[in-house]
Image 1: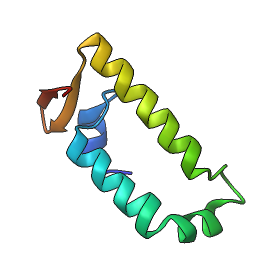
Image 2: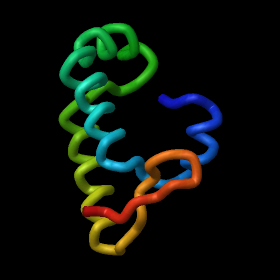
Image 3: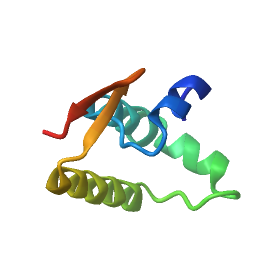
Length: 79
């Protein structure tokens, strides 16, 4: 989830690692159980699968030299 303006600017780009690390900490480590309990009636909540998909996406980005979204109109290379 992101502010509408950030989400629109990010478009279909992967987020820079600083954002994905923050997402992981907030949504998997800190609030994972709460999110699963509250959202499981509406969504499949599988932290392991989410992490696997994210790892796969970033691996493909790295292999293809795709830039990651950092901030409003700012992109960084995959490391």
